[in-house]
Length: 97
Image (cartoon, rainbow, N blue to C red; front, side, top):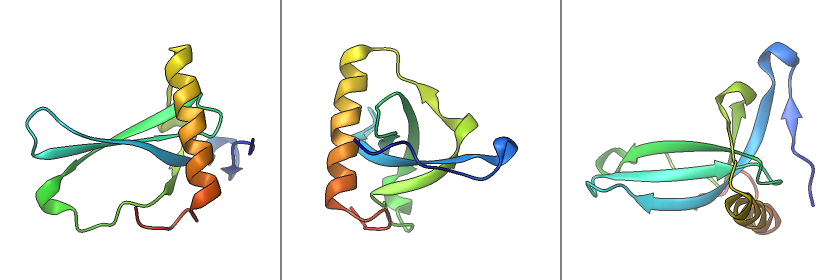
């Protein structure tokens, strides 16, 4: 499995995370997009308004390491790792998905 990719010095380290989930929020006006590291250990959630989806959703994004949350649940970690690896194998980071 691919190692987690980081860029920059310790103060500004960024991590590439891959899209692992896209779900509708309860109000159905927002979409929740979850990105995770390829080991499934850390994730980022983004809430996007359906009406303002001007910026494309890409297969991966680079984010500051300190913005990532830890995945505590082992089953979720395994699921995120599998989906992130699948996305990394099938897509370039900038592919619109």
